Figure 1 (cartoon, rainbow, N blue to C red):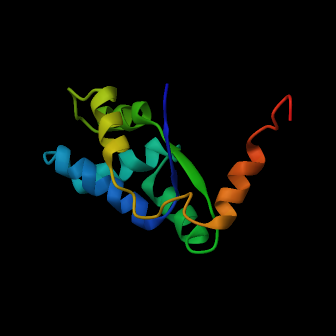
Figure 2 (figure 1 turned 60 degrees about the horizontal axis):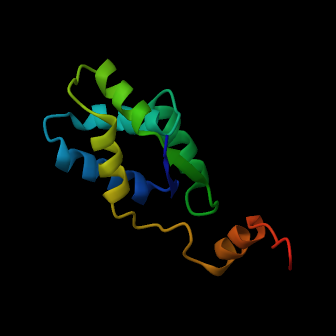
Length: 120
């Protein structure tokens, strides 16, 4: 199952929530808060906010968004008829303002993870 990886920042969380609210206007704002937190693996929105405040601005903390967890939490909150594919499409099409490959340091870290060529 494919998961989108984004930089964990308040701007990116807000962008995701805005995109989801645009596609699903009948779902309440606070329910999206809880569902987005669940999609990152947090049990509650309050737990996610605590971590988000600790890492904002100083750390390069990456998270994967799990559309299945998002859907499950929304179903727990009483919203049926959602599909993982539609949620995943919304997640992937969302323009995230804080790019995770934006600067030289992050690109250097990514290059370190690429294995050397076998014949190089």
